[in-house]
Image (cartoon, rainbow, N blue to C red; front, side, top):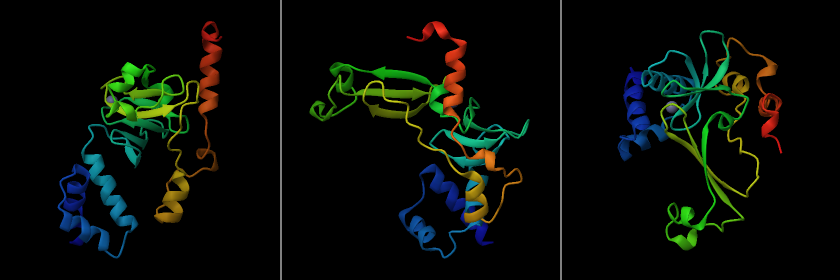
Amino acid sequence: MMSKVDKELIRQLVDGQISRHDARTLLRMENKDSERFAVYLEVLQTRVAWSDRILLRISDHLYVVSRHIDGQRVVKCDCGQEFGDYRCNWKTAARVRVKTSAAEFAGVYYPPAAAPEPEWNEIREFFCPDCFAQLAVEVVPPGYPLIFEVLPDLDRYYRDFLGLPLPDENPDWYQDLTVSRTTEWAAATPEQQS
Ligand SMILES: [Zn+2]
């Protein structure tokens, strides 16, 4: 009964429509428990058109899912576009727009004086290659490696924090494989190396 109420509240929360009062009620509830996380995932799952199991939402549009076809854990956009193994930085599979000039910065920052200095910084905007949703922005010195924002230890989270171990637990899951992906690509396109 309580979880039904919960589900509607959580839907409102996810949609940004929850009232302040109800948000406080959620915050005050005793059990910030695995059940509520399960309801949250259920709500998320109803909002996407695909059926791969959502393990975690990592941003407005991106999820780590367990792909039902092969059990791979991949990053997936709500539109269905996949960004490959979640252990590789998904940004390496996104479209990127890099802004480097003061004029471009002025279009993003207000007031313009708040903008970073060109030459010392660049703005990288990442987009989904399929639905073109903006997925992330980073402001970094030119040449700085892509920031890998989220590499969750999913097995540990599900087992130790939720008490709901994933069926495909494996110590191999939790590692950063980004370098292996970029190395592979570099080998495949040697002419682009400088
Ligand atoms: Zn998309």
